[in-house]
Length: 179
Image 1 (cartoon, helix red, strand yellow):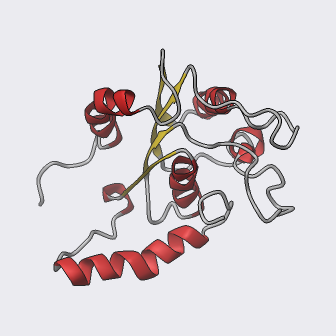
Image 2: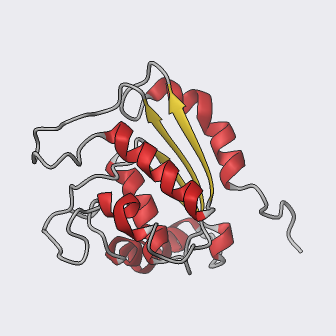
């Protein structure tokens, strides 16, 4: 429920409960600068990463996803986003002003396809991620899309091969020295 829900609630939970605990427990000070903050995840965690930045771009500008679940998996049903994260490429991104996000995303050619879950044609990870790349390009977003051959869902070998360059891409343009 928390990862596939199309709202800012999860980001607000992380902001109000998780990050203050991290700062306190580990005696660190995390930046509040959204250019210095990223979200990352795989599968539903990937869609959650984009959801966090989409609903709270004042908090996060950088997003990294593996096998993002940009599908109709939201529960409970919400009439504002009736197709869950499928709404990103169906309506939200095409019909909204561009947000200050930098996105890196990957999907494997043998990623998940579960057409019988809800019989709605909105449960194919490859199609969903390809649709995301198309709408991000059409809107002029800074994004990179990796289509991994011979790879499955949140494929470990793909992560091992791509994560260093994915992180470089996501953090491109961020100052490397403090001023």
